[in-house]
Every structure is written in structure tokens, then in C-alpha cells.
Length: 94
Image (cartoon, rainbow, N blue to C red):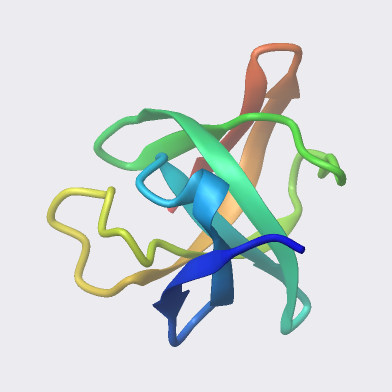
């Protein structure tokens, strides 16, 4: 059984093996899709590693940045759009 030692109101239990890693919770259509690792953060965009689901360009996603990785964000929940999806990752802009 996997130990859980971190908790977020937005994500529920976070597995201990990802605690402290640059991850965000991805939401689509009002449902949590899961945790995705962040490759890079720019001023108005971020690049995620590919996960269990890869989203086509134009997809609207909500990102819950429960670790506050995005500097100067007004909220921990960001409405984003997929602007690129290639082998280096999924690029989201807001």
C-alpha cells in the first residue's frame, strides 16, 4: 500500500513519491484528469510532461497549481488552452 503524507484541498491525497516535485493537477470538463509534471514555466505559459492523456491543440484545461509554481498568479487555479503538443511536452497558455 502506498503511503500518503501530503494533502491539498484541490487534489485530495498526493502520493508521497511526488511530494515536492513540480507537479500540477489537470482538470478537463470539471473533472480531475490527474497530476502532470511541469517541464518549464514561462510568464504566460507552462509546458507539461506527457501523461496518461495527451490533449490536442485548442483543448481548454484548468490547472490547479497547488504548489504555487507559477509566479505572480492571482489564483492557484488557472484556465488554460493547449497551444502546442509535441514530443517535448504539452504547452499551455493563459
